[in-house]
Length: 369
Ligand SMILES: Nc1ncnc2c1ncn2[C@@H]1O[C@H](COP(=O)(O)OP(=O)(O)OP(=O)(O)O)[C@@H](O)[C@H]1O
Image 1 (tube, helix red, strand yellow):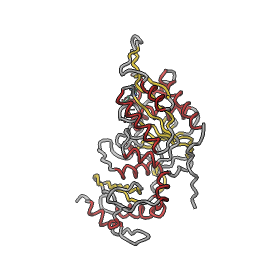
Image 2: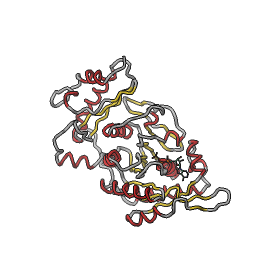
Image 3: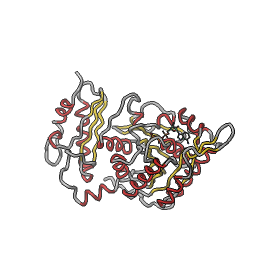
């Protein structure tokens, strides 16, 4: 018989909260329990200040559910993203609010940057992939976290498949291609399985991909954010220790309005905007070389000027970019002599210059005692 949420709740009766001794299901801290065949996922809502104390509860919940017959994988996250009806109905105190404002840094990782877009399909993931490789080509140690959990594209873009190796406990080893360490939810779930995420789950999945992976020492971690500027993206931007964000847009007016929202979102959570990239800006005919401005052109440059953020360059529509992206052979690595590869190298140079220009949001030092 398939496992139901009621079975999961029964198993969780044995897990008690350390302070009150209350059973976890009665505490009101559980988010919706999702069961997908033999996989179970849920999160436990916490106040950010309780993270360390509640780790034991998370681990106990996971092993209690793993003991249910027929269950092959259990993902339990701690989330400080208070869902309505879950933990902490009281207003958070000033200390909790301050802690929530500042995500803890990642030990060993110097800078974390986001590649984001106000809307889908503008080439954000393509940009993140080629930017990460171009940064690695500069001799930097680079990781790429595919946080676009609604539509993970890094396995395809990097031509990677297979499951990450578990190195100890829950800690996974990232896969590697073109000199970049890559982690994606796409490695963990079947491509055909539609994932339906609720707000708190998004954060717990991201937390796992960010913090339960043996990234090792990295100069830069590039995070491919989910497209858009909704609550999930805002929470992610807030809970990831970001040193800066690159916004990708196409030149159409609608995309630019969304890009403006993207800039505003990062500014709201005090993440510096490294700049805006215009993607698919013009079309150059591969036969005659004639350049067509399909969607108008230069809009992102003007928008960047208007918003007072740097403009990082423009990349035309290119058959080579599309074909190589689809084939898992990114253009910057496999066609380094082309103008597209040159564009990504320039972008990488501007990003590293922005990062070395000042540790404006250097991650706080973590002391583990
Ligand atoms: N400069 C370009 N020229 C031609 N095709 C491009 C270019 N940039 C991206 N593409 C193609 O556009 C499509 C969308 O790109 P991509 O997946 O990177 O967008 P995205 O913004 O990350 O989308 P989503 O957010 O929906 O995942 C892909 O097929 C990609 O190969």
